Image (cartoon, rainbow, N blue to C red; front, side):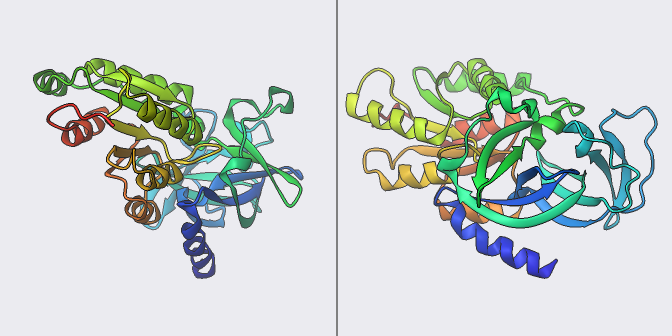
Length: 309
């Protein structure tokens, strides 16, 4: 475990330069899958598990993890493979994201790799991975399917998306019009959640699907000096082509953009992510998805008067 964590620390140095560190694993055949190492706490042999009555079919059970009971998700079933629930050689991948800790059963952990953000692309439907794989790339010639573990978790964890009444009243008092926020996220569901949140705050949105598109649009807006001014960027971290860390770094290195406020909004949590948020000079980090917390961060960072760039 110590050697593995040392490798993770080495990989964090790449994150601010649009490099993604992933832990690879298999689910029973030769296909390699990947997960961002920032989400992984530990990998171990499958521990004893307790069955959970009336649980979602993806839940294999629960187990004790360092004194805490956590749910165990059968990732094999989620990806269309035979269950690993009773396979003694299976491994437990303990993860932390979306403000929760959970385990995923995988057949065989492999190795840590890193790849360029530009190499990640949405999978073609013909590949047959379905909605639970959100990106593919190649490492040493092998096809890597990046698992959307947030999508798997959302199958049985409902997310509140509405602002509380008190926060809606606070936002109305601030009267944020005509300010605009840029929302950057590769997930259509997440983009819609954010646009809905800002609609409740009477804030207009400019939307981008990844960091590269966001940077290009911000540069175009800065040159045009038109009506579509942006005062704050709310960006996901994990995205193809250019991730949120690299986007923030690029904003800070571009004279016309560097005064923009940037909130990184991600399911990734933990000490590595906190270090990278400081490294790239983001103004705030908010874990997905906490509507009131994100709204308060936006209110804190919005300038008292409209500033254009």
